[in-house]
Length: 113
Image 1 (cartoon, rainbow, N blue to C red):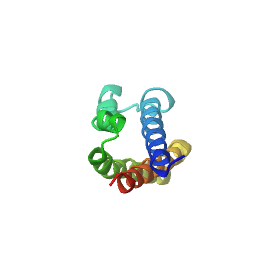
Image 2 (cartoon, rainbow, N blue to C red; image 1 turned 120 degrees about the horizontal axis):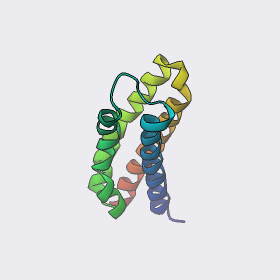
Image 3 (cartoon, rainbow, N blue to C red; image 1 turned 90 degrees about the vertical axis):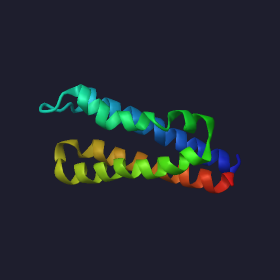
């Protein structure tokens, strides 16, 4: 398998894993009691919809700014793992998927040029 294909697989795995985790976290696994679910979906799942088309089409420019976008999810995971022990396993999963997505994006862009 070529390194660029491996980076693309890592990107897709990280992206769809983070998308699924965030969607389930907000709706099923640990819904907020103070903020409506619709607002949480817009805040956490909404930004992940922006790069969907470019990631599926393999556009390097989209991968570049998705690497910056995923840093927000990494930061959220770190803060949640520190502040909320009840949801620590979700936060650690978010951190791992963010790292996979970030690494996949960076290597895909680097190998695509």
